[in-house]
Image 1 (cartoon, rainbow, N blue to C red):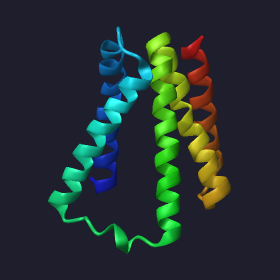
Image 2: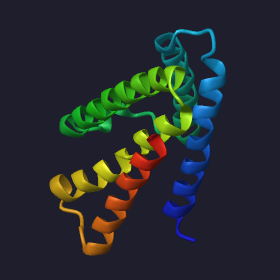
Image 3: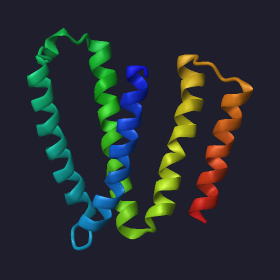
Length: 138
């Protein structure tokens, strides 16, 4: 199996645990505070992994790449802030379905911005993701 597939499966598995642990942990906790605590845990963990891997020279990242990484981080922080607000106040299956519609939007943006391939099969898959998100969220 290709490495990226293994990593993607592991990503999906661990991502599936986030709303479950999150919903259980948010019972009497402000969602913004919970998101901040989660971010600190993630930062400490990831800095540790970077140190163990020897990936510590931030100075090697050029300005454009660093800007894009910062923007990605801000987008991720906003995504998680709103995600935790949504799962605290809503039905987890509906929130997850709507959130995972981001897959369809990402595929569309990858086609539009990055020039990735968008064939009929991919477009149909995107449409089915959106239809599925709508059906689960109703």
